[in-house]
Structures are given as C-alpha cells and as structure tokens.
Image 1 (cartoon, rainbow, N blue to C red):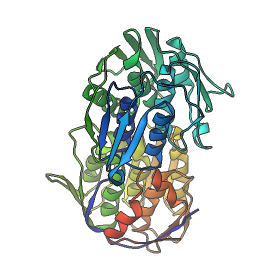
Image 2: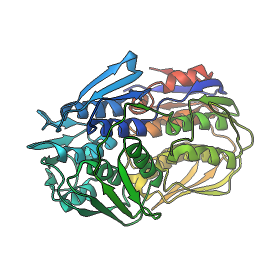
Image 3: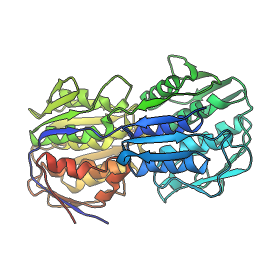
Image 4: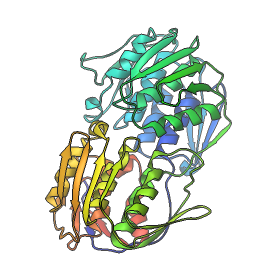
Length: 431
C-alpha cells in the first residue's frame, strides 16, 4: 500500500490529458467483434484497459500493444472462441459489463467472468436478466446478481429485451455492442430512470464509427439495433475529461493556472461538464486550439449540481466544494454508491474528517464549504482511484497538507497522475 504525502502547493504549467478510458474500452470491445484488424491509436494503457485487452485475448483475439503503448492492434477471430480460462477483469467494472454480453457470442461452451473484491460487489443482475430475455443463459454463480458470472455461448437469437437503466448505463452499452452481432434485429426497452446518458452517446458514436447501426428515442428508453458488419481500420482515442477533472480542480483549489492539452469536445464525454462546473464556481476557463486553460480565481458556492450523467465527477466536485464558502449540493447520483466504492458515503466521511460539513443523502451530498482547511490528517480512499486523486488535489490547498492512502489505485485510470502533478509544481511524495 503506497502513501502519498501532499504538501501545500500552487500548480502552474502545461500537461497533456491522458487518453480516454471509456473510449479505449469501447473501441477494444468493438474491435473484438469486428470483421478485420483495428488499430487503436493513442489508447489508454492502464490497469482497467489492460483488463479489456486480456479479456479480448481470452475470447480468441490477437492483441498487440505496440510502440510503447502508443498503439494497440486487434485481430479478431471469427467466431469468438470459448475462453480456456476464467476472464479476470481485476477492478474494471466496464470490462466486466461489456465482456459479459460479448461472451454470449462465442461459438460454444461457457465463459466465466470475475474480478477483485470490489468487482464482486458490483450489481450485474439487470444485465443478466436482459441477456436471459434474449434467450442467453447467463447467471451469477452465487445466485445473488454479483460476479462470478457464467455465460453460455452460441450467439444472440432473441429479438427484444428490457433492461433497468437506473443502476448503470454500462448495461445498455454492453447490449448495444454485443447485439451488433445478433442473428436478428433487436429492440431494447429501458425501464427505470436512465442515468449516465452521455456514456450511452459515446457507445453509439463508436458503434457508428465501426459501421454499426443503432437508433434510439430522444428519451433514451428505446433502442433499435440492426446487426451489421463492423469494420474500422483506425480509431484515434481522445483525451480523457474524467482524468483531466483532477487537474482542473487542482488549479481551482490552489489558485494556480494549468493548460491541459489533448482535450476536445468532438466526441461526447460526460465529464466535460467539469469545465462548466469550475466556471460556475469561479474559475476562469479558456478554450484553446488543443485543449483548455483553467485559472483559479474566486470561489463561489450556492449551487446544486446534478451529476446524474457524470457520476464519476462526484469525488472531484465534492473536494472543490470543500473549499468553496456556502452550500453546494451534489444531486441525482444514487448510482454513485455502486462504483468502485460507495462514493457518496465514503467521500462525505473523509470530508468530515477534514472538518468539512458533508451530509450524505440518498441521492447525493450536501457540503458546506470552508474558507480554509487545516489538513494534517490521513485520508482513506477505499481503493477507489477517483477518491484517491480527488483528496490528493484537495491536500494541495490544506494548510498542513494531507496523507492519502493507496495512491497506487490511480493506475486504474491515470497512471501518470502523480508525475503530472509534480510537473505542475505540486509538492507530493510517494512512499
């Protein structure tokens, strides 16, 4: 377990946003069922995406990571092969969800998918029910709706199914990708509230780049899928607003100025919302040709932010609110309790440890920010990469800094996080 000691610092300088985790996962999944070779340009090479690389290999793909990780070449089999071993997704919930549906496309046999302790607590039953609605045998080994998961291969022969959209949009994305290779046109009806809609948009965007066909209604409740040949020679991965959000917060909290390159809004990204949130709270955000510049100015509270479609922003917006006078409410994120950890309860608990009023409610957090924070405490991160990175940047603005546990969890999505902070002048030490 690695600790990071964070001392008061002001961040200034230029960094490049890491490649998008979400888009790397989606491109890998689609390349796995494509009809020809796909090259992923500038993919994210991190623990989570390597889990998807390994899952594709288990299903029979040849996957080569080239040029020091600057490219991934995927050569798919036809059809997918039954794995010769368990598909271990580590800590990657996206891999678990996407490859559960893809496993139904193997030529025969059974696939078993599992992961670490956190993964084995993440809900899967809505996806399993939806797959069974398509005639696929899919179940939890413990019959409790959690991994380990077993899926029988043989293809998708059903014509319609329903899925609950209130827990995770990854269930919908998983079905949209796998059903591109179904034997018949598919209709998917979504029940419950539809959360994280922009992630669905991202999935559909990549499907269409591969030549797939999906139509959806404006309310995100009905999807019509026409099975298609999937083919894309090269996919260029955009920069990741989710990871960049911590750099935005660092500039805001320390009164610094950071230029973040390799960011574009050309492809939908839910966490691009961090720019509007930072502006509302008092930062100056300037759009540049290759990214954005963020300067910490004043700090303004008195806001309610619905993060229904951006639940990964909960930890970072919460730490920004901790040093913003007035009340900030984070709402519509009940589904954030089912991420790598309970991000509502855990974030509120750690903020209170720092002396911030933070009340966890059913669907969010109410925070009364402070003018300044003493710090000098050790923060638990619950092995949640986004909590670890969020409290690291908050520590930069605490009078006595903070100690943050398990900073190695950042490798899940942003392996260069600590190095990038150091480039920007942050006084941080890992030991």
